[in-house]
Image (tube, rainbow, N blue to C red; front, side):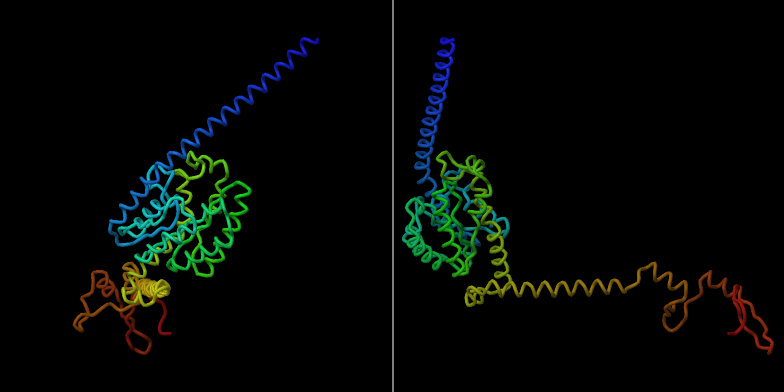
Length: 355
């Protein structure tokens, strides 16, 4: 009995050791894999930066400008164009049916302070039709709310009034999420003061869930992969679509001088003119529909002529020659002598005399 107990004890101990050893081995393998992925990210940085820098030389009918960090660079995607900035540029091109020049001012590793220092001076050289800002994720590791708000105010005050600014994404770790909540409160409050549109990046990334977020992340477990960037882009898409439509209206209804003089009000004026045009077009369509509805169809005109509800047209003041049916009616007319000696012409089927 004692031997059986000893064997069972040894088996339990060995089994536990195997499990612990396997877990430790898996953890070490995971750490090694994450370190290798982090090294690959480091190798990506100059490649992505050069790719976007080369895009600055391209011309386009519309200009899309992005301010941000490594996520705006598309780090973690299989190609820079598969990051959220590249995906939004493609969407703008398809929706507007115009060529797009992408000015990506983002810098990998940038904080709000770094964006204020390095990216805002370059912003003055451009007049973007569409502008997105996604910055602040790198502030969370060493988060200071007051400094964060000062930097955000400087950035939001410098970008165009039509810029679309993003929340910080969901980071899942409780300590970081508490800081993210404070940062996003600042983002919403300052954006409202400047009249900027906020892209709900935190809401959308949290809605995806932890499990899907894991599979939508690159090997370093920080940057998104291709699928993850599609989710990021979806947070911006409604606001970007609305801005592209506004730009199209401005270009159609306003001259360049008018748009420049109106500034932030150009979109509202163009939208009002577009509404007037739509109302006018709708009125014309309604009038045409009423006119068409009042006009009798060919079958109705034939029936009216047969029943005598409308006179047959006369040409040159002379009544047209009767048709065979009409001549038959005339031939079948009969003359009836009334009691007073007068004569009345009657058709077959007439009943009675004068009313």
